[in-house]
Image (cartoon, rainbow, N blue to C red):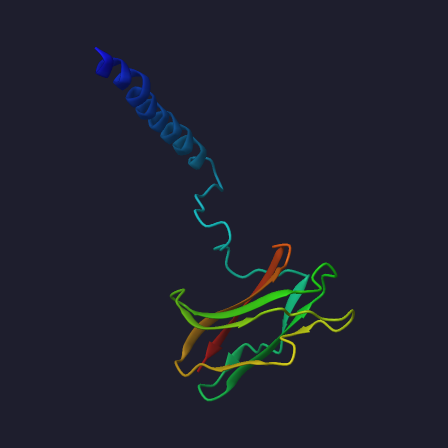
Length: 152
């Protein structure tokens, strides 16, 4: 008798919750321009432009012996210190190379990053690539920019 009550109280509640949640999710995803984004930190929107950050020195095309040499320019005054990550992805969204520059603190008016270092990578395989630069402040505020280039 007790096991029947336990099943009704707990088991049936879990089953009904899953059914109800699935129905609601299915209904929401049927609306136009809706998608299920399980990782909100990594957007799949393609190329984006954020006016608070830009990639300086990125060309549209490189040769297999020419380095991708870039700097990042931050225009947002709230980013006076943070970590900078620059990643190059292949057309299959596989990371080809990544650079991490920590504690990038800069003075007012001098926003070219990385400070005291350079991001310079040679991509020796021809193809289309996407470069993503992301700046994360100590307050965990983040801004990012994407660019696309080809290697021939």
